[in-house]
Amino acid sequence: MNSFSFAAEPEILADSAILVEASTGRIIYEKNADLQREPASMTKMLTCVLALENLDPLKEITMNQAAATTEDNTLNWAAGDSVSAKDMINAVMLVSENGGAIALAQAVAGNNTEFAEIMNDKAKAIGCTDSHFVNPNGLPNPNHYSTAADMARIAVYCMKNETFREIVNTRRTSIHWRYPKDKWAELNNTNELLSKYKGADGIKTGWTRAAGGCLAASAKRGEIELIAIVMHSTDQDTRFEDATSLLNYGFERVRMIGILDKDKVDRRVFVRGGKKATVRVEPLNDLNFPLMAGEDSKLLRVTYDLPKIVDADKGIVKGKVLGEAVLRYDGKPVARVPLVACKNVDAGFSLGSLFVKIIAPFLND
Image 1 (spheres, rainbow, N blue to C red):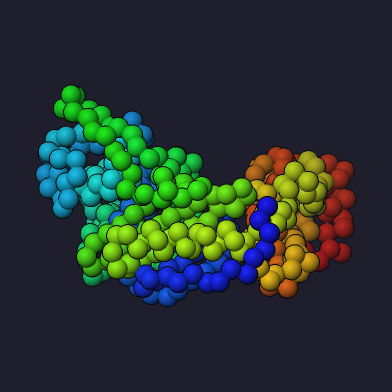
Image 2 (tube, rainbow, N blue to C red):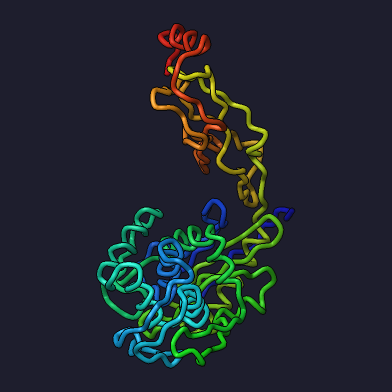
């Protein structure tokens, strides 16, 4: 566990940047984080997580003429070439294959316009507030923009997908064409931090003249995982230097505090109309919180937002969200975790449920 350090804020050359703790998204440092900028190939984080969520990894992805002739044909595609969805996602994330992103978008949605709508809907669901996407690869377009804060939200979401994590932490791999069968390519990840920074485990580079140097970088040391976003660096090298400075700052300044162990929380809710009178709830996952230099763990407090009674007229399924645990620092909410039912409760009658029915009017729920 890191000890607290009052590290000096990093000097970031990029126009905008942000550093967040990966499990909570808590902001550790920001510079013009809400400034709209073109995200370049960081866009592909969203493209690939949507592909992972919507495509069978063995699905055959075929390059049509439009995809094969997209700018920067890194792997020398020809119309009719095909690979598995898994291999195409690797190509898009490791060597930033622009045409491959087009092909994935077409496989998911049929065309790029429909896929862009899916991207924008997903971004809003994740919590993005200042982003708009019109293509799956980040090639320049005045209507294609995001912010460092929104890119961090997308990165946090993506890194919770284990397959995504595995892909972006791959330094090199090879892919093999379905057609033509004798064609293959070796992929070397464009993210040089993977081999240069201790604990680096992702995520995605980006570069266009309009966007400048962009980078979504992540690293994990012990219990702490950080995500740094850099946008509009002056060149392709300073984005790595900026991300390194941000990550160093975070690891020097942050420590994780264990708040809730999901297996040790014992809270119960009365059940009305069920074969059991109560149901136990537990946090959906453990809750840890990044505490920064100068903050006092004694000011952390958990409150439980739970109804006193839940109805079981249609039954209660194990895993159903019944409330949430709210972590507060000095009285202000800073993190939340859903509270879910630990077991099924069937609708029906029991002496216990009869008792609950009798006392219900006297409970303030």
